[in-house]
Length: 148
Image (cartoon, rainbow, N blue to C red; front, side):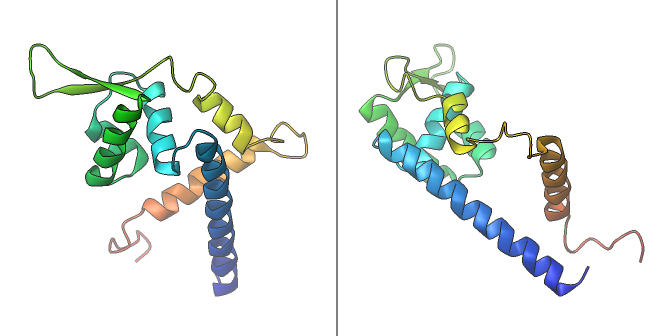
């Protein structure tokens, strides 16, 4: 692959990242959250009785960042932590139903991807291409290719 093609791919990924960040920031602002907090609330609501480690793995966040955000979200009442009765060291996180009743993963995605139902977009092709790109980016750069 030539440099111009890789540069175009990289530039488009930066634009996508920027647009996704803007969209999430706008949704988060409506709830008086920052984008990281929004993602944690959505993750906890989508994965009830989860734990800090699992949230970090799914969202690609550092434990310290997620822990700080979770403490704030507990304080303001977006999520609750439940201590396991049999093992007090285990804590599970649960979204509070009384807060963010309109805030759910589906509504966030529909806001972020408005217009995706337009027939001019081939969503299956987009998903397949993104899978390919994830595979490319996940490859270990120090691992020699099979062709060598």
